[in-house]
Amino acid sequence: MKARKITAIILAVILCAGLTLTGCGKEGSSVKKNSKNHQAAADGKDPSAVWVLRVDDNDVYLNEVNFYALSLLEGMGVEQGTDMSAYYSESYPTLDSAFKAQLLLQMRQTKILYQKAVERGLTLTAEEEAEMNELVDAFIQNYDSDTQEEYGFDRDVLVKIYTEMGLIKKLENTLQEEAEYEKQDYGTFYNFVFLTIELDENGNGVLDENGQYVELSQDEILAQKTKAEEVLNRLKNGADPESVIEEYDLSATSGLMHATSDSLRDTYGLKDGEVSELIQNDFGYSIEKMVSVVDSDYSETVNAYNESSSKSNAVEDQENAWFDSYFFTADDVDSEVWGKFTFQDFL
Image (cartoon, rainbow, N blue to C red; front, side):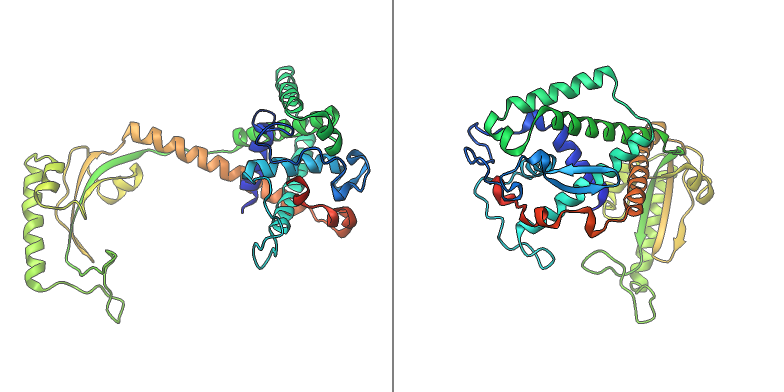
């Protein structure tokens, strides 16, 4: 799974956790109830005092790990009683090991992004802090006091977690705003194609041993050219393109298409409403009818999509670059605590 997708999953889950988690002590919860101090990694200690890992200058204790773990279980819809020792894959022998690897990666990425937000001087507004406190309150109300104590879910750590995630969201919004995108004009045209080559069962052109298209018989080629000339004449006399496609049974090869306005000008040089001459190519004959060299509505739709996609990719590229610049060593994780940590303790 790509880093961007991983971060997006945990961000979405955690920001909504206070409203969506079923909560310990409530019917349907995936968390064990009345099992105080059952968590092996805590070893009977206060989770807030059990150090687990470090990312740059950020220390992460077991209570915070518990929150991320619980959020991951809830977000993935893992049911109570699930056997986390079940086989998962060659790389991760058990389901537990796979979840632990995912959890460790998510926590590291979260801390890296939080650090970058701090370096940029980002802070929450008064309104954002109020929203964050509402989420914390909602989360606390969903968990009984015994579970909060067992997992170390005090208000301080919850405020810390929700604040960090709020800043990460703000960082990603900032990166989106900073990413550049150059809009393009797009045009709309009808493309009519009359094939003179053989197709395989998948609709692809059949190639001979020299990599050339296998042509139809001469009679079939002549028939296709005759049909193309008839269609060309009809279009030049104002026939409706959709009616022509239906009448000549061309739906499999012809129809409405779009391309950048620049490419349409360079390739066909047609004005709105104009029809090209018969064009011969490697696969047969084609005719182009220009609907609009610049289609404002289509351009707006495509640019909106492309801009969003381009900016999301820019954010992903920047985040991956940050992730790649951090190097972790064995000293960054308490191997004993992490070795005892298991998702089974939550189920």
